[in-house]
Every structure is written in C-alpha cells, then in structure tokens.
Amino acid sequence: MKVLKFGGTSIGSASRMKKVARLIASGDKDIVVLSALSGTTNTLVEISDYLYKKNPDGANEIINQLENTYFEYINELYSSDTYKNEAKEMLISHFDYIRSYTKDLFTLFEEKVILAQGELLSTAMMDLYLREVGVRSCLIPALEYMRTDKNAEPDPVYIKEKLLLQLEKYPDIDVFITQGYICRNAYGEIDNLLRGGSDYSASLIGAAVNAKEIQIWTDIDGMHNNDPRIVSNTSPVRNLQFEEAAELAYFGAKILHPTCILPAKLNNIPVRLLNTMLPDAPGTLISNQMEKGKIKAVAAKDGIFAIKIKSGRMLLAHGFLRKVFEIFESYQTPIDMVTTSEVGVSVTIDKVKHLQEIVDDLKKFGTVTVDNDMTIICVVGDLDPANLGFSAKAIDALKDIPVRMISYGGSKYNISFLVKTEDKKRALQALSDNLFS
Ligand code: ASP
Ligand code: MG
Figure 1 (cartoon, protein in one colour):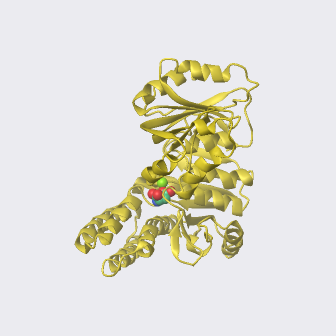
Figure 2 (tube, helix red, strand yellow):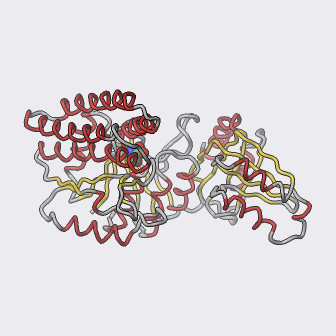
Figure 3 (cartoon, rainbow, N blue to C red):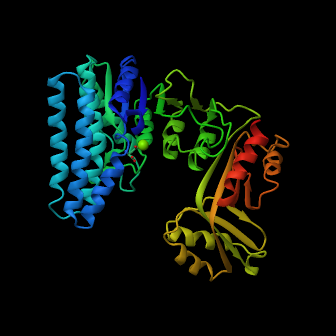
C-alpha cells in the first residue's frame, strides 16, 4: 500500500482533477490524501478574518464568490446530470454550513471548522468523480482518525488504531480518499495540522499503515538543487537522505513541508516527490540511503533576524549560554543558527513576535545588537569533516559576499551562512556555479 498526497495546484482545475483521478485509478488499494483546491484555504482564512471583524456582509460576499468557482468547477468535472446534481447538493450543504457561521459569535473554534471545509470539499468531489468514472473509491474521514494530543502533537497510537479500523471496513475497494490537514484535537474539536499540513497528514498516514512509499505530488519535478525562481540552471536532485531533506525543507525548499520528514524517517518509509504535470519524471526519492561525497542542494530562508549578545561576563564563565537560551525559550521563540566566540554569541530567529521583550531581557547579560532583513543560506549534502575541501568550496563561493555568520558541524549534512537578504540572489548563484557546474 502506498500513500499519495496531491497538493492544491494538482487539483486546481477540473481537468487537473481528472488527470489525478487517472493516476490514482491504476494503483493498488492506495490511500490518496488531498489538500483543498488551490486558493481555497486562503479564501477561508479571509472569510474568517471578516467574521472576526464582525463584518458578515464582507464574509458573505467572499463565500458567494467561492461557491461560484466551485459550481463552475463541478460543471466541468462531471459529465452526467446525476453526478452534477449530486455534487451541487453537496456543495450547497457545505456552503450553507459556512454561511451559518456568519450569524453568531466567531472564535478560534469556529475558524477551525471553516478552515476544514476546503479539504472536505475537495475529497468529496474527487470521491464522487471516481464513482462517476467507475473506480471503486471510498472516502475515509480524517476527522475519524487524525488526532492531536494535549500538546497539539499528532497522536500516532490513536491514529494507527482508528485508521486501520476505517480501512478494514472496506475490503473491496480500489482506492481510499482522505483529507489532509484536518484533524481533531485532544478535546475532540475540529482542528488542523497548521498551514501546509497535508504533507504531514500523508506522512502520519504512511507511518500508521506502514506504507511501502509516501508520494508527495506537486507541480514541480522534485526538489531542485537550488531555487529555480532565483537561480538559472537548477536541476532536480534524484536522491536525498532524510536528514538532508529535513534541512532543505526547513531552510526554504518550499516543495515539502518540514514536518513531513519525521514520521517517514522514524518508520523508514521512503518519500517520493513527484510532478502531476509530468507523472513519468523520476522526481526525488527521500530515503535513509546516503550518497557519499556529494553536495546536494542549496536553499534559502528569508525574514531572519540575527541577535548578537556581547559580554565580558561570558569569558571563562559557565552557564552563560543557558541564561541566553532560556530567554528565547520563555518567549517560545525557536533559534535557528548559533555561533559563539569567547566573548559573544550570535543567534538567529525568524519569529519576531517577542523580539523587543527578548532584546530587553538579553540586555541584562550584555550588549545586544539586532540585524534584520537577513537570509540563511543552507548548503546540504555529505559534509562530513572527512570530506576535505567540501566546506572550503562553499565558503570560497561566497568570497565576494559579506557573510554575517557561518554554522558548520552541527550535523554532517549541512553548512549554513547568514547573509543580507539583498545579497541572497548573488550568493545562491555563486554557490550553484561553484558547487554544481
Ligand atoms: N489546505 C491547507 C493549506 O493550504 C493544507 C495544505 O494544503 O497542505 O494550508
Ligand atoms: Mg498545500
């Protein structure tokens, strides 16, 4: 059994949904995880925004527009009136349900219900379409098995138990369809795995059923060795090790949600990134196989703040770093990069909500400076120290660019540089030229 996840753009139009239907019909009892149609979740966020602002008219206008795009979509998707009508009824019931939330108090709880509608719609439409074309599909409701615990972390034991119960109910089926992203929380309320969370759903499902493979279908041919929007001559990376993929996903490669790697890695299930537009292209295979002696890819993450704390008190002292890190922890702000010297430490963060409080607290320990508009550039591959010259090659590529921080040795898979965002393009191109050509 495989798990195949299709993102919003893969089903962004009726013709694309038909294409996906052809792809999944040929599988062997696979589980297909769908996102909402592209743009839908953003629109649902916008609707919620109007409702938070107590503007039901604003919300209703957007709801009507969205509903119309869905009507056009189903008109093109189904060929017979029977299915068109059934789909229309299904849409109306969902959109009326959304409208019912414009009349009352609107809180985080109601918002989560609204946000869940995107995946509920896309999966119901696909299920119905498969039935129209004679594929025996069945809809497995994610709200019956996908659950987070009190710390808002997925609960793998519960997920496995409940999902297997669902699957057992349908022995004579060609394909299972289910929703990505949505779940219930520890209190049984409708919740979600955060934006982009469908990849996470796919990976959790893959782990639960011990899938042969988890496939993430998007509209680009695998993970590229650099950002194709910024750098010329990028090419897809064929193989990545889990660790390498995690670094790339976290540090900017948009193709895969970073949370997706862990459940697959823990259960040693390969993840394949594939392109719906070019289904025969090999894509990228993420597994526990490490290709020795190769630098694989470069990725960049913008919106970074670098904070430097300089203090004579750090000299020969112990416990200084703990005090610094505790401040970040108390404001629930994750740190990405760290570099230290004997008299100072620099860290980067991308969450700015409590920046001012953090800086105020840090001032108790030393002189604090903040640089904003920074970018982390992360070079990923076999960067084992034994590979002489590998790190030098990356550093040499950046010889004409002011580098604010370098982090190497945290893992064997990565070297990261912090540069000004205005130098990002130059830095990425130089790395591509030096490492891959
Ligand atoms: N539909 C959700 C989002 O747009 C989940 C996903 O697409 O992965 O964030
Ligand atoms: Mg998505």
